[in-house]
Image 1 (cartoon, helix red, strand yellow):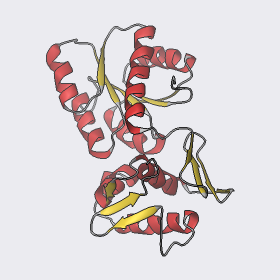
Image 2 (tube, rainbow, N blue to C red):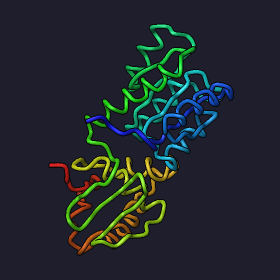
Image 3 (cartoon, rainbow, N blue to C red):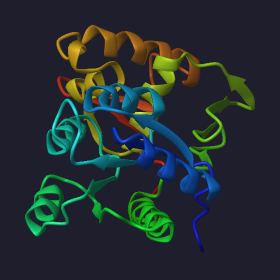
Image 4 (cartoon, rainbow, N blue to C red):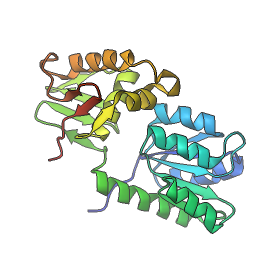
Length: 236
C-alpha cells in the first residue's frame, strides 16, 4: 500500500532565502508542511517544537557547520535527515552518511528529484519503524493521533500541555524500547536541562494521571528503574 505523505512536517535548514523559497514552494505543492531554520542553533531549537518528520540540512551554514548540526541532531533524535550540498564531493557525501544522514542531494537539483528523495526516505524509515502517523490504537481504551495532536482516553479527548505532548510523542515513537532520562530531557526540554532529571519524573506523573487507568500501576508508561521509561510495545 502506498503511504500517504500529506501533511508530513519538514524542517528546512538553509540560510539562502531563494533556496528556501524554492524548496518550500515545491514541497507545499505536494502537500507537505514546511518550517524553516536559517542557522544551526535555530534548527536544534525548532526540532523540539516542530517535531519534524524529516529534515533537509544544508552543509554550509553561517553559524555551525552542517555536519556539526547533524551530530547534535543525532544526539537527540532519530528523525531522518537529507543533507544538501553544493559541492557534490564524494568525501562530503560519505562523511554525512557515516555520521547518520539518511541521504543527500547535490545542488542544483530539480523539484522532481527533491520530492522524490524526500518521499523515498520517508517511505524507507516509516516502513521500518511502523511510523507515528494516522490513528494509533494502543488498545480499546487509548488512541493517539499525532497528525491531529489528539489523545483519546476511553472515548474522551484529553487535553495535553505542549511539554506533555512532546514527551508522549517521543515515548510512543520508541515504543517497546527504553528511553533514558538524559535522552528524554534532551529531546523534550533541550540540552540545558540534561542535569534536571526531576523534570522527567514530574511530567511522567502528569501524563500517567491523564492517560493511565491506575496511575500507581501504569500499563502504558513503564518505569525502568535507574535507566528511564518505556512505552508499552503495542505493535506486536
